[in-house]
Length: 131
Image (cartoon, rainbow, N blue to C red):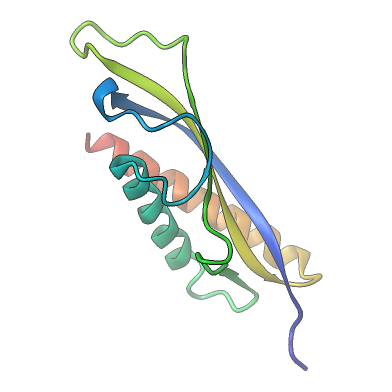
């Protein structure tokens, strides 16, 4: 019996500190958005998500061409950069990755979302700690 697949989404939000000269545009986009920094982060997040699900049989990352990463970027107008980092601005980023999931397997979906979310959170922490 062949499985019936459905799409589920997982979102992760984070703050991204970028110099004003490298600012991404504000708004809602599909990846890539033509901003080198944001596109690089999204590319790495997708790879991390794919690797975290490599052993799963009921869940995979959806095809990028059909379901690109959805990105929303908004400047944090309340952010004040430290005096030793003038020109730095914080952007609030929300990225949503689509998953192919076996229809009706709610436990697999829940487990996959937790796994992907935690893995992406760790990778974002690793990326920011090296800066």
